[in-house]
Image (tube, each protein chain N blue to C red):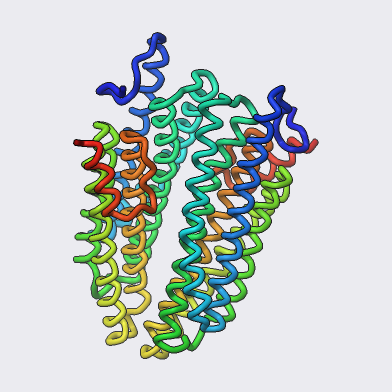
Length: 241
Length: 241
């Protein structure tokens, strides 16, 4: 049985501390990554090159955090030889960290586009969509991490479900922007910058969904990737009964 | 000391068999993924909607392979409690499998664009670039897997180095296509389809590089991610001396 902290109690107090620590490092990295996403979006919207450059600098810090968490997981695997729910915790952490690092990468790419846009001049369209989708995916990242912190499979499920909405909004924004480019070809390169921003945001949503799926795996022991939302929901609800 | 098969010999013959098996499953998945990339590119170039649909169907098979390999890794971690180079092997496999699955996803996205292009009509530009970059990244995937099969850190290094070239070619192709769109706005949506194909190919290159970095970690025990190519090369050459 998993306890409130999500893993079995161990005779070794030190082992418990190690598991708690690596999990809290993941959540700290997640908090920073979430802030990177919202700062990058703000840099686009406010045409703030300084903020964009700051996002790009902080990306190095995220890489260092990733490496540190990886080393902790490896050390625990080698020394503690975790089993059952502890093993699932370590696996989920070491996979989530990859998604967090890639969310950081996308934030950094968005910041690069923000800098481009301050140089090339504002795009004529797309800021509403960037703000809106940006806020949604930031929230997805936040909730995926919250679900990780609370071992909450239902919250994780709602993050995965939300990703479908984002995909729809993203596609409709793209269609609109493509139409706009045809009407005003001189704006093409600036509109393309906005399209890349939206693309990155859509990927942030994908990564948040991946983390959410890992939370469901962690809590329930079922691999729900590629499962389709309907079966995933059945899986989560089944275990609640 | 790692032997030719890349892991220490064990008293348990069965354990050796398990390690060999999971590695060969990874390579089999890699072979299929590589074929998916080249088929998807061919579907774009030959405007072959049938081939594109086939790529999209086979994607499910890749997801099943991913899940199978994940389960094998988990079983080995739980039962065999691998240490040192065996643990690195399992970690590298379980991370590489994520990259392979995402390469498969990109192939599937390319196939979707191929179908779009058979419906909307040919794009006026970009096929030369798709063929060229497509062939390069397919080769990167092939060599990354080869490096995995042979525990060849130098080959892995060359894959990582190659990724930089791809990024340059990709950026130059994008600039050209953006210029072309301005000249012929009616072609925008078809040119955008080609741009998405190129974007996916560039990501395939990124994933191949990730796998290559995992090979270097596997062989040398050094985490070379985010290290920069120069330091990575020093790291690989250092251990050769």
